[in-house]
Length: 592
Image (cartoon, rainbow, N blue to C red; front, side):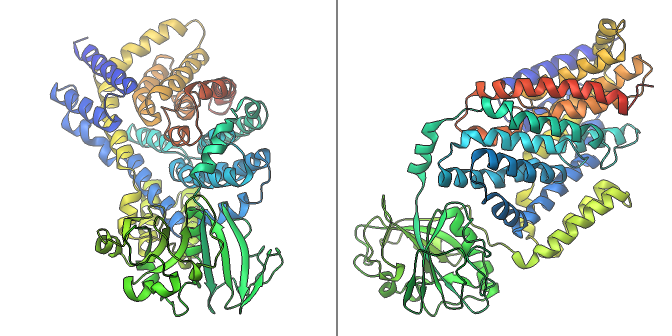
């Protein structure tokens, strides 16, 4: 045996140390490691770049676009708001989150799902005075558990699938993982809804922080003749269940209706007066035919609506607008904008929006043309003009196209009429061609850092295999477990995978351990599939640390968590799921 295995192990050890110490972003570290291994001629340039053309990597990229299309057409937000808004207690909210997030995560990438649900959970927490620390760790864990149920549930599954095909092994079927993944998810849910819920921290101070951060705007919207809300009750229209939004009263031809009963029917010309936070105002803005009521002549065509966006503007001390009512200020004529909502520091504005006299420091939420921020950024009338980053024009008229294409994707993958990578690329293309999202949004939806990390990790995995380093380590493990059989080796691989995924990314852990699994199977004269299934499940089992899995990092800050919270809740869960996996895997995929 030459020097190659030891050099490779040295590079991998240095890479692992750098990842743990967070010396640089994972994609940069993996690209550097691959470049070094190729420079030392341990792998060929073709091996170094093979990951960039791997079917698994291509599928991950396409699934990012599919998930973005479902978000852009409002399909995901419609499901979440209507379903989650009815929960009254944190336990009920946990049950509803589980019933929604687990199935969604089985078919969509976890990251965009958690990104969409975090603000929904925070708004619900504000409204119901519940600490978000009671909900956000379970949200992340639900997405991880759902991802173990199908081939496309998480990028880790797709990465291992790509490696299997690359090594001339039969790939996984869409629901093959479900034999272990569904029991795995059920047990995980039972734990999180019982023991886990008792362990979850209840950070009372977060409730106060949420209250302080909550900037409530007064909003007045007019129901135009083409609005879908006409003839619906307030309850049926979903206006009682938008988190962080409250319908104060309805102005109907000068008569005030308030408080507003759930069975009150909405009519054409009604002015709906709300108080609420920006994220929920955005949901109102995206209802066709519901427009800002500050200008009676305000009408926007569907094409113009797509081009408009929301921005915030703060009235300056020297603004000529001071002392004028919003109606008299005539924002549409002067600025080409409509005032959607008003926030005045610390207290709710009582007047109707058109009658509010502007004061220094008032924050206006404006619906504007794209160039507004650039044109008025330095206008002395305003202290600050900035885009609302959360805002996007929802393409609800394309929601049926997105749903139909997504069902088609599941059908193609289930029947295997097309290879999974081809099917996902085709549906991603049709989502763009069908107007579900723009090409720019599709490009922005792809997490390039994740893709670069995965693609570069393939090169490191190839070095472990071709240099003999994986064989060297496998023989050491084999000598330790030879007297106990392949089941002990399977258990050690699961433990190794679940520990590695806590300190480096789940995809990187899967790629680095893949050649190791093949060598262990070879030494035991065993089928490699049980070892690879253990790898898939263990690489996704990132419950003990916020570092190893992206969705854990996404809830870490908003939930006000400490590192120890993940260990307290995740360690028992990891142990329970590990036992289930080690028992079930050999029963479903025998060693011989």
